[in-house]
Length: 134
Image 1: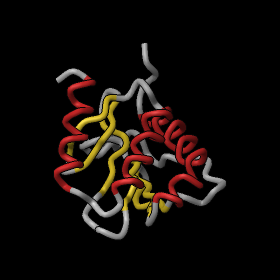
Image 2: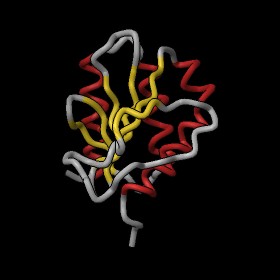
Image 3: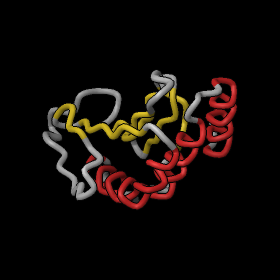
Image 4: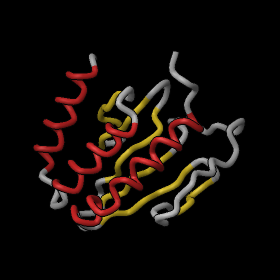
């Protein structure tokens, strides 16, 4: 699927889902896409997910009161990678495993207020887990 068709598929699935935090989800999608415009957004694990060579960021939409931004190193464990430290001066991330960190958001305002920090951690995370483009 081409990137534009994939993005439209994500939008259609989100519209059908009608999540109570739809605005926060839209803002998070925009932040991740702005941080890595070369990443392809698709629907994986029942949520929007972004990939370069492999997936590195996925939203979790199970909770109607909270949206999680999960930063990871792909679909399969990567023992070669080890810990993925990223600068997080805003304190957004909770380390869930050596190559998995999670940021939780409960409102669109919280996402908007944190947007520069979200973009910074996503940009750095993707640079650490994905090989450089080219």
